[in-house]
Length: 396
Ligand code: NDP
Ligand code: MG
Image (tube, rainbow, N blue to C red; front, side, top):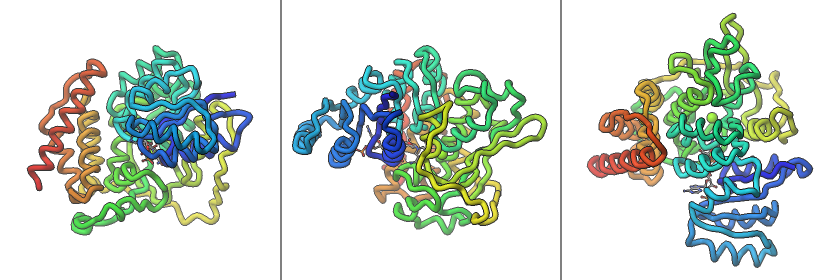
């Protein structure tokens, strides 16, 4: 039996993970569930999955969580606060940790799971973007494994030679790999001009054509920052330099990514756009389990299209490549500025196109420094957020 902690259980990835787990009660058990503030959803999940521990990150909600769980007849342990989420990730209650908290808020618990030698299923891409080398070092020292859940990286993992374990050795030097090709749907605004993007609302940005996701990643998909974060994630996971990572827009989202080899072979992983495939692969690897995903009917698919990304309209992708090439803590600065800008956009306080302006201004203000340790990285994250907030205030 594999005991699984689902961090961010009430989110989109959390829900898909619990759906896969529930299909295999003889194999997986959700022993730890965490949420931020959504007590109602967490209680409903506890009723269904009967974990041993439920954690609410917002400590002010602990009493309400305990009361509602009692009323629902659930008698699990209850904890609260961010430190409790981190402790849960390293606890003996789980062998596997699904890191599905959104944003930099997921870094501490992701690192804790890695240090504790858990099998770490990584959805929380922001943590590897921020702290790539530190996270990989923690995985290697902890003696566990890192398995990508992000669909593109899960696809790359499936297409790479079997000796290319994420985070262990530069993949490109092994097995004759020449190039990693990340596919991007292009988001809801593919093909639009800058002028057509001036008045985009949060609701429009969150309406992704192919995937149902949380609001932050939906906006990142619309700006193409999500693909930028994924380029950095691929660099860390598979040891690929920026020049060996390409992005191609593929609006049908059926090919989830590709690996090109020296002999010209290109291997692709295909599937319907449903995160349960990647999650099931990561949960069961190296075996395979049923995920509840409809079989892919290629004869019913529209012709598959491919086009280059429009880096002038969707500048966030270019900024992410820039941060990756700068190296050091530039990706962490990029991520922090983006989180603040997206928050402001979702609150109606920043135009869609200005998300890239804020990120660019913060990157210009904070030239890359070497990453020393987690503490200095978190301090840098704080400074970058402060800079982004100041730029936002001055812009209004
Ligand atoms: P959601 O917004 O749907 O869910 C986020 C989860 O994290 C919720 O459980 C939320 O709790 C919790 N959370 C939010 N803030 C905090 C915090 N400060 N402390 C502790 N917990 C917190 O996000 P998604 O599921 O869409 O995305 C999760 C991660 O997975 C992101 O990093 C995203 O980039 C990545 N990812 C997502 C994909 C998708 O298809 N959705 C695909 C690939 C990667 P509460 O409900 O209480 O607010
Ligand atoms: Mg992805």
